Length: 281
Image 1 (cartoon, rainbow, N blue to C red):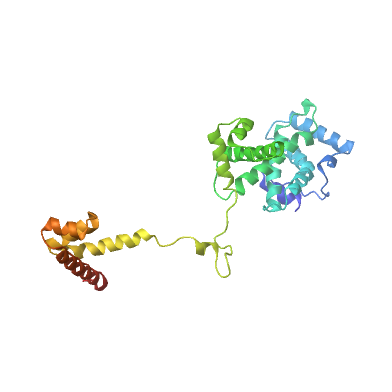
Image 2 (tube, helix red, strand yellow):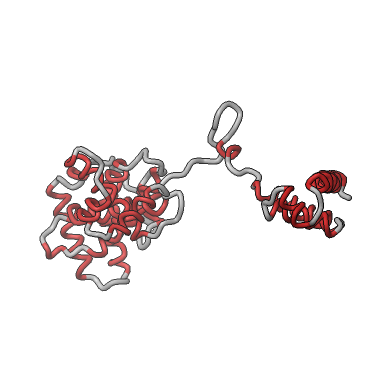
């Protein structure tokens, strides 16, 4: 990807001319004394020009062009992690533009030293914003990364997995926030519903089922009309038997009939209800 395809999409560098120089490591991007000196001169010119004038815009663009190899170097460090390389270049180019705009040549720093954290920060922010399976606000994303790193460090130091309290002490956050971050870590990736599961099934095929409560509701709604057709005594016997958990002898004593009579009435009533449910009336 040429510089022209990276720079035009970043704010303030539209129309940047292509740079055909090969990408070089960050430590060598401006190792030549003349390259560093040229960058210092251009930053001096940029600082002296009023913002918005054509010469200021051209000088700014030229500085961005000069340092695009630095962006490519850092983008390569994060290549192969699930995000397109061009997107990483774009994020890094945005960081480069911010660094050019904020750089103060009077502080005595080399620009590449100043710009590196800003470029890397934009690339990492791209990963935080784009690679989570569900939306998580940035503050929690950053805390999750901090907790994950601390957990790794403490595991090495302690020779075991750290407790929530130990993580809270290391990170300097309440235990509730640590637990929230640990839960959040599970949101970083998600399994596809189309992922294979067994021979001829996908993960989606294993999720979801008929709720057993639906059957109970259906039976209840179907049984109500059938019960309403029963004589009062038969309804009373069903109530005492199945809601009052009374034995046939207890029901007989309460109704003043024989236990044998209760048994016959109960069998006949249940059979009638069964037929009502099976035939719909």
